[in-house]
Structure formats: C-alpha cells, structure tokens
Amino acid sequence: MDPSPLTATLVVSGRVQGVGFRWWTRRRLEELGLAGTATNLPDGTVEIRVSGAARDVDRLLTVLRGGATPGHVTDVRLVTAGRPDAAEGTNDDDAPPDELVVHDVVVVGGGPAGLSAALVLGRSRRSVVVVDDGRPRNAAADHVHGLLGHEGTRPLDLLARGQEEVGRYGVRLVTATATEVLAAPGGPVAVRLSDGSTLRARRVLVTSGMRDELPEVPGMAERWGRDVLHCPYCHGWEHRDERLVVVATHAGEVDKALTVRQWSQHVTLVLHRFTGATVDDAVLQRLAATGVGVVRGTIGELLVREDRLVGLRLADGRTLACDAVVVQPRLVARDDLLTGAGVALEAGPFGEYVRTDARGATDVPGVWAAGNVTEPQAQVVTAAADGTRAAIAIDHDLVLEEADRAVAAASRERGD
Ligand SMILES: Cc1cc2nc3c(=O)[nH]c(=O)nc-3n(C[C@H](O)[C@H](O)[C@H](O)COP(=O)(O)OP(=O)(O)OC[C@H]3O[C@@H](n4cnc5c(N)ncnc54)[C@H](O)[C@@H]3O)c2cc1C
Image 1 (cartoon, rainbow, N blue to C red):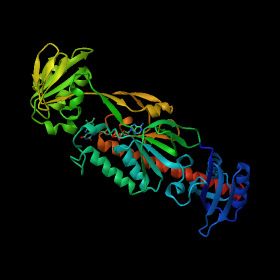
Image 2 (image 1 turned 90 degrees about the vertical axis):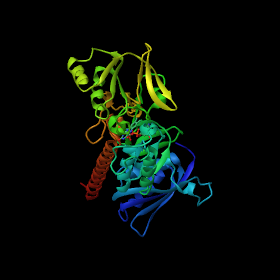
Image 3 (image 1 turned 180 degrees about the vertical axis):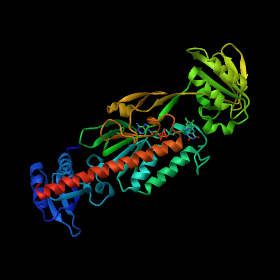
C-alpha cells in the first residue's frame, strides 16, 4: 500500500441520514487519523470527504463496508481519489486507485468462459474486471467450429466481439498476467498482477484455461491447429475423406481411430512409442472390421511440402502418406493460481484437476473456477456455458451476502 497522502470522496447509501451515522463517521475519522467531513446529500446518501494516508482511507472503507455502522448501509462507493498535490479535474486523479477499490468480481482469463461470465455479471450490474494475458488455447486454429450462430468465426474475432460486448456493460479489461490469488477468510480476495499492482474483489473467478502438450515429434508443434489436430468434432469436417493418421501413445487413445473413421475411409492408427499393455483383441477386431490400418513404430518426423503435410517418416525409415494427423495432447490445466490459493486437486480421467462444486465454487472461500481449467473436455460453447453458470452462482452468492448484511443491520437498529 502506498503510504503517501490521498484525498478521497466516498458516497454511502442506505438508511444513513439521521441515525447517528455522521457522528459515528467523524469518530472513526479521528481514530484513523484522517481529516474529513461527512455531509448529508439531498438524495439520502452521505458524502464523506477525507484526506490522509491511503492505508487509513482503505481502513475506513473496510469499516464502512463491514456492516457494523449505525443505520443500514447498502453500498459504499469510492467516487474520487487522488493525490492532494495533483492538479484537480484530470481523469487519472478522479479515478479511484485500484489498491482501494474492492470490485464485486475479478475474472482471471478472458477466453469464452471468462468473457461469458463477465457478460452475465456486467449485466447484473456488478463491478467486474477481466484480467487476460492473450494466450487463448485455440489461437493456432484458423476458425472456430461447432459454435451455433458463430460457425467458422476466427478465434480472435470471437474474443474481440466478446470484449466489445462486455464493455457495453461497464466491464473493465486489463491486459496482464495474474501471478497470485490470495484469499483471506471474511475479506476480499487479492489478485496480484505481473505489473506489480493488486486488484481486490469480493469474489474471484479463475478461467485460465489449459495448454496442450504435444508428443515430441519434430515438426508437430509447427503444424498444430492446421493439419495436426486434436478434436475431430472441431476440425474433422475440414479434413473429411483425406488420408488421416491417428497417433496413440497408450491403449486409452486407440478408440480415437474409430471415431475419426467417421470422417474418412482412409484412417491409419500409429502406435507411437506405445506404452503399457498391447491393444485389446476386441479393439483390434473393431479396427480391422472398419478398415483402420494399424502401424506400430516411432514417428521420426512430419513430412511437409509447400506448407502442406504430406506424410510422416518413422524412425525405422518407413514413410506413411497422409494429409492430417490427429493426436491426443497431454492436457495441462493452467491452475497455478488456484493451487497457489490452496484449492485442492482431485483425480479425473485426464489427470488431476482442481476441485469445484457443480456451480464452480472451489473449497477456498471467494475463489471460483470455470472452463477448461476445471473441465478439460469443454469446447468453446461448453466453456462459455460453464462461465455463465458460475457467474449466476457468484451473483446469487453476493445477493445472499448483501441480504444477510441487511438483516444484521436491521437487527442492530432494533437493538436485538
Ligand atoms: C487448436 C485448437 C482448436 C480448437 N478448436 C475448437 C473449435 O473449433 N471449437 C470448439 O468448440 N473448441 C475448440 N477448441 C477448444 C477451445 O479452445 C476451448 O474449449 C476453449 O478455449 C476453452 O475456453 P476457456 O475460456 O476455458 O479457456 P481459454 O480459451 O484458453 O482462455 C483462457 C484465457 O486465460 C488467459 N490466462 C491464463 N492464465 C492467465 C493468467 N495467469 N493471467 C491472465 N490471463 C491468463 C489466457 O491468456 C487465455 O486468454 C480448440 C482447441 C485447440 C487447442
């Protein structure tokens, strides 16, 4: 926290006029060593103008939002804040500094899950910040498929449209990497950013996605998203009737060849650096009966001509002509922020994933997660749905918290 002096204007809403609130506020200002005034405004709110150390202004905000005030406080807004020696009236000076603002929700990750959540929360009149560092999982692909109403849109165009849409509802977009999520019981959750700043929010939703780790084959990473694919449902149509190679490194990936057969009669399964038991007899029979060839051997390199995949060479020198390769990458959740905050992992079919309930709440209070970071099989549409579901649940969680605070304030007022 910056110890330098600050002047700030706060507006407190609720039943706060004529209930000793201004007297109580002046006492708090004295205790905190802040200079300031509290004034009743014609709209029923109380305006508090203060100056003092930023740390103490922050404490005042915490006390006002803590629910132990006289009357019934429904909202405390930091309207302006700035350095007292700065020129008045500039935008920068009027905007409350981030270290003092407690947003309703900070969303980490501006992909389909994060932007969908931000859209719902922004439209629910929540103050929302989305932090994103611009590494969407499907960036390597030319087009998004299987997305009703947006079939064939470019991935970055879809995100740009989403950013514009959330902007209409006051959602703020910050380009940065979130480096740490710090949750404290009963307090706001802090999100540290790569630029050294900290955002604070009543709830944090992590939608940081995952990354795909490809088998180590020379040339494979360069063709990723073009003619090296992972999901026939996303890009199989574009490669229908072509010569397709499905790469399996263990028995669990062999079935994919049967699935891919749906798109082409020319499918070869390559058992690449195959580990574990041999392929089940029943599976081999299915492959043979549906015309899928099986080759065992290590892929040495992909063969590319005029920027098109034309085949692959095995380490023993054999070559196999093909137009596209389907692989199963290792799916690695970008969950460092969540595990760093203490969220537990649980075993799933694709490895360990952070544990959330059906709404997206983790076991760390205030910290939520949605999209590929928790569900490796989520497509764009299902990641977006996941974000929407989490957003509605978060909003409801905030609504209940606010209602409980109102109940406590009413009870105090009655002297219960
Ligand atoms: C090559 C390829 C093609 C695909 N094609 C399709 C398709 O055609 N149709 C389909 O439905 N699905 C497709 N998918 C799947 C699709 O990419 C995912 O379903 C979708 O991206 C999941 O959305 P998400 O919001 O969970 O994560 P992402 O889209 O990955 O978004 C996560 C965002 O969080 C940001 N981020 C991560 N960590 C941090 C941090 N610490 N601080 C700040 N920001 C952070 C990232 O930069 C990223 O922008 C494809 C996937 C791949 C790999």
